[in-house]
Length: 217
Image (cartoon, rainbow, N blue to C red):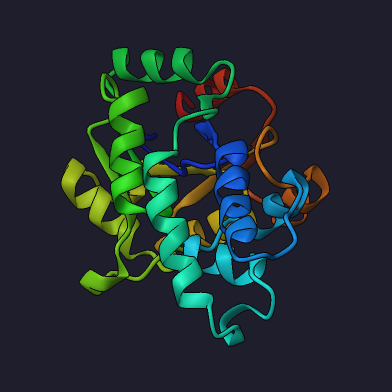
């Protein structure tokens, strides 16, 4: 039924929350603002790094120092995006199995494009050849708009009817819906199970290898 899998990155393939939290708090310390906990940052991610900082900086976009703080975050995170980050348990086995079975795979993330490319190169380059991050400066809308997903499918030579989207959040479900694709959500990411259930995806999986039972149907 499927020959292509499109993955979200943060909270799906990689546990990036500690590096994101450390980078947010680097900025907050630098500007003299109160730092955030990991749980607070978890609730702020999912709509791109600009919205992450909007939710993290006091008064968000209305803060006169917002643009400076946002630039500071981008520069810091670019060089500190893989200090504590790691693939979730079972992810590498899943990707290896999918690759050996001939599935085409891509990453589509609202994280900055350069960081997505770097993280894919570090962790997944043996299995995933298309990795697309946020690049609205080039006129491509970020998720939940479907444009990045369509770009990934085009680069893979796949059609949406033969692809499935895997993520961990409401943004991912909306992205899949907007792209006209079925969606699988994972429990190990940044959102609680009750929220995932309320979104009514095709399936919710507790371990990465469970995805094989869905794509092989």
